Length: 336
Image: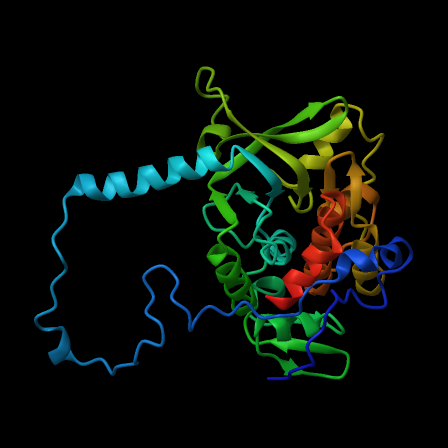
């Protein structure tokens, strides 16, 4: 794999112009790999020896006994504690696609910032499990590939881009690092049904189980739950059954005037624009990823993924700035 020197700042590339330049101080983050494969995480043994498998070694394999109620209690107590702990959180990220996960990864470097990710699908990752037209390879245009070095994702280097052999390699890697972070909780199979807005500032989200949300027209009233936050990062993707939900709701309540919608494909224009236009679109809400194109009329870029990664990282920098993260906090993140 290609490797690069460690970086102390988030590098969003030459395409991120204008307002991005003013965010440099917020971009002072560690270009460090949070590789936990050699650490003890949960039940993983530190540097556990690799053993060859054989039929003989499995002949007398037995699980420890357990009661069914133990399994139920182990799941419910932990999930309900997470719901309790994250009911009032620092940051909510709606959507766990490539932009949302990239944002979450950057925020994982700040353990004092509590982050809840809401994902309507059972399987997070959005459209980043495959490349274009259900093919495997993921194309990332330079210089976004430098971030792949931090993540430890291998690639084939070309002149102006790199190729990850399977998109799922990137998605599973960044997801594993995000899920291992103690300050982050992913609530998947959970839909955002509405926003909490107080004094024209977004202050959280209204949630429900995704299956409930999809069947409101077939059942009687099924009231939702709520999560409060200091900042919301909307990474709901382009238009679709639940896509671009955040900006659609902002238009409905009059906090933004219009939604021009995603323009036709133009890779070179699109990727620069998506990063540049990532912004706090309404007080308390940052829009990132392909939801930017729906909100602000940027073109689609098709099967290239660098803009999703860099837009998510810029959203993290904007979030840190909005939360008033200090220079000392940035330095601690770099040193970790």
